[in-house]
Length: 248
Image (cartoon, rainbow, N blue to C red; front, side):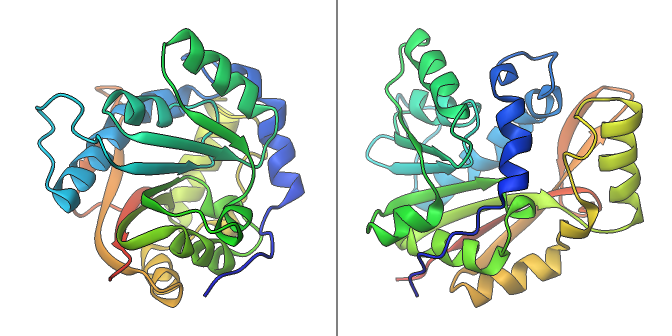
């Protein structure tokens, strides 16, 4: 099921190239990700621990696991995975993100293999991982099915794929585009294209077509009063995350 055809959308990459230097500024253009990150990490670590029978209270609970963070940006997820003991590869199609991530990891005393590459290129090269983190990327690629197929090919049998994205409905347009880009100005205008958002049912269908078996999905819900995010079993109306496995 391997594919080497790139799904990179150059216009999407240029948006993130322009913002690369701001990755680690919690009040900069990536403020929404910094706010969301604790909630994302809660989901990711719980799913990995459950799938691989790891105790999160132990030292280096992910030791021995090889984890790929595809679309790693400045390393907001790659660094916590490394701190938990995993062997981490961070890959991004936006070249300017890589030196930003490398410098920050070095300053943090972490060893992370950061690469300017694509999922398709890594799959074609025969790279394999226990876990593929695919967070807020699928809505930016030219062909979601080809991209998810590459993610499947990057997993070992029994491997875990975690994918988050944005639902496509009127509420997500108001919240993610009108609210985040135009009113709150958390993101530059044009960062997202609503037509590229994917409903949970559509994503589950795409994952199955790519050869993955969906096992879970949750919503990321923002509370404007507490100014924080939480996981929800039922509210997947805007941001949501899925877990799927490549069966042996």
